[in-house]
Amino acid sequence: MSLAARLEQTAKTGAPIAFRTKRPWPGAIVSWLQAAPLALVLLLMFVAPLAFVVVVSFFDYGRVDIYPAFMLDNYVEVFTSEVTGRLYLKTLEYAALVEAITLVLGFFVAYYLTFHVRTLRWRIVLLLACSIPFFTSNVIRMISWIPFLGREGILNDAVMATHLVSQPLDFLLFSDFAVVVAYVHIFTLMMVAPVVNSMAKIDRGLIAAARDAGATEGQIVRDIIIPLSKTGIALGSVLVLTQVMGDYYIVRMLSGGKSAGVVTGIATQLNAFEYPPAAASSVVLLIVVITLVVGIFSLVDVRKELAA
Image (tube, rainbow, N blue to C red; front, side, top):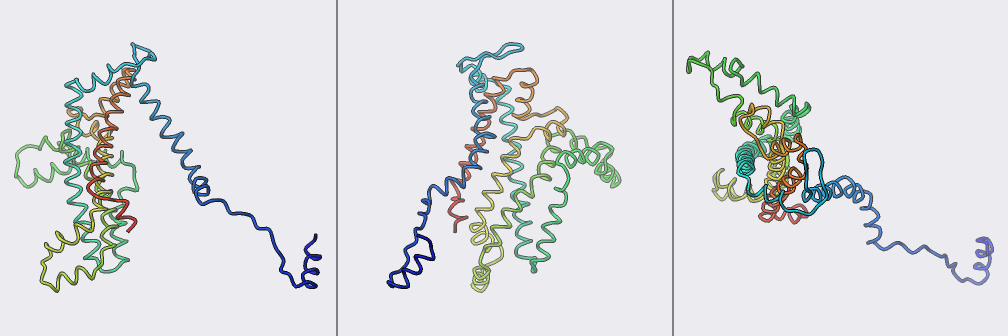
């Protein structure tokens, strides 16, 4: 029956028109359909390659080829090799130093931007000023430290001009000092941004009430700001640690070959066509990084904090 006929019948009988409506899809199905494209991308670009690396880590290998097998020799070599142990210790040392320095610098930069810069406009301007160096490549910013820290570089020339030393300082370049300086320079902003975001959510009334109660600035920072900024600190720590643990170019270029990390050892194995040992080292490194991340998130319930 056409709509006009149904309207005419309704006018005569007074009965309402009954329209058929489509039943909406269940919410669970809609959610799965929305997440499906991203899940497919992650499956193809992340899960599948990672699974391939895990499988290869159990293979045998020769000079120019690898052989499908299931053997634990590659993992035994990772855990028993003295060289690999030193590489892990050096990488963890870099990660701990850079984490500590970037945490202190990033926290106080974020604290100044949030609580001492009064207007939102200037806060945004200063935060953008901090991020300007990041508009260039990490490689360019890393290499820029070589002429600055070299024996005839800007810093050595300035120190020599003060007559505090009689010869250039050799520890500035191609050393652990240069590696840590470059790490801090590149990764500090990764700590600043999450901490600023957490501090911006702190109720200013709490700080005003603490000041009225006679609390000092140090007590306010210790008892109010740090506990309420722990989500940003946790997220920034994860960003810094994962970047340092997975770095290759900075430690290679600025250590001058005097130091190396786990990724450097993996790269050496790849260059020697030792793909199964390199895959095993990669899996172990991934487990170590995941353990560190889980440890940080076990101290701070990030999901609960973000939801709140």
